[in-house]
Image 1: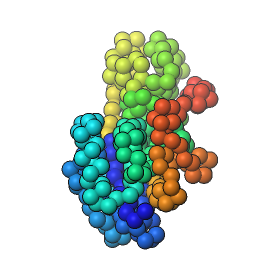
Image 2 (image 1 turned 90 degrees about the vertical axis):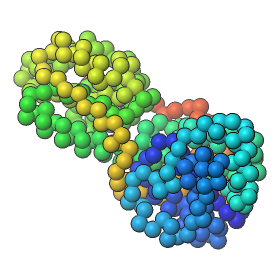
Image 3 (image 1 turned 30 degrees about the vertical axis):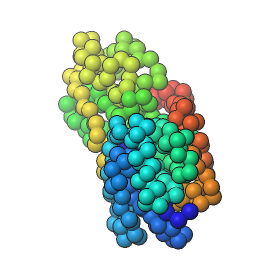
Length: 322
């Protein structure tokens, strides 16, 4: 193996740049050439390649987003698009690829490898949702929960000052890891996640009981994929039966940006280094993960097929500690 490429795909996540940096510098330190592919699979199809040097990633470890940028590619969903991507990789002399992303990224990589097995691919889990099977933590998750926690702490100041009930919606269309951990960390009265059915009547009863006990403010954290329809819909129903002045805040994409935390930078760097070593060891079609502090290798098909599950004890904790 003489040349390794790296790209980011799907939603951006804090820590991606730390992972890119590790891939580039590890490759070069082992006598390999490093290539960045801009705009994910679409850049692969269009030949948007960047010959990278150690200085190419200087002063990037602290940056959010991705210096290689990201894009969703409809062209890569076609056999013709994947063939063009393959032709471009071969023309560049690229032997191995590190894909940083989530489900969609690894699905695309898996299909590509079935058609073109002579180019090795490994993945690093880049998604703030922390829902990929085969790793305890994904790149971006730690920063996202700390960003959301800080925002909710600020919202609580206003809630307390004005005797208000705030519904705060966080990201998590299919998984409630952000909502659950942030809810626990901020002392929320309730946390609503896609993994469990939301009983709006029970929620109203809880909030009314709190009000009757002179609790002057409340916070309810809602994952965007909650089955009851999201923060605005739930808040409208609660308003009809609860005396609190009720407000809604949607944190949205603020959770995907910002400077990565210390542990995020370290974890992403470890994964980037492990990805290069995996390629040099002849591995392909696997996602690099971290389980109990150790590097783990999970086949793409398993990482895609399965998802991490919410620990029911955490949901119980919310009820007990609220």
